[in-house]
Image (cartoon, rainbow, N blue to C red):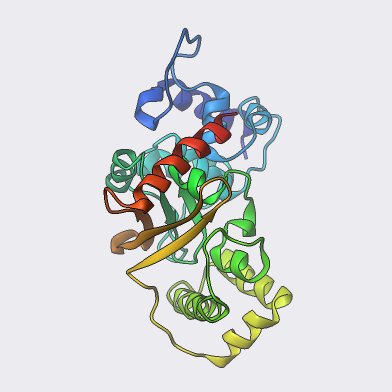
Length: 281
């Protein structure tokens, strides 16, 4: 990897991205012509110190996940995204790996839903991006790293979610997620990261091994349902959760909304205000 060239390109592309295009408040006087380093780091889910080392060529081995996160935060078109992967010493993601790219049309959708809790997952159930409203509702996702970002891992082995589920609902959700992952493995048999995910889950979760070995088939997801979120400051909020599938890019977009004028809408609005303040602080 040519670390200096990788860093130069990231810096050059950072300078050309206006804060407004990525939902960052411009505010006050700015020395940077584009995004500040800490702004890009926040959008990509990495530390500002690590981004500094990458830009200065002092860190020369970013993972493919970090490269993809930077490409997404910089809104790079396909050709530049492929170049960034190549400069980092990675092959450009092809059709034989689980897609994690958010196309411009989906990004525009996310931009327009900035005040609605939205999260985007890949076909393996790994969180690609969540907006600020989602983090305000569900808890901060920006600190999640690696396997922590996988929904199945979190449901089997991670900390408790704010979504309220009965034991039976939790068991059914896990079964659906394992069945979905099995289908994903069949579609992307050459994806090494996907193979590592399955091995890690099998190594640490007896429940996963039981479901995986059963070969049980379930509907891949519930397209729409009510969910109750136990928010630490607002209490329980019942919302509609709609799952949108972006078939061409094999993405799942989860959108949380409430009917106007309902108790859920009022509680959601309060949760977003309180949560956004907490995230800013």
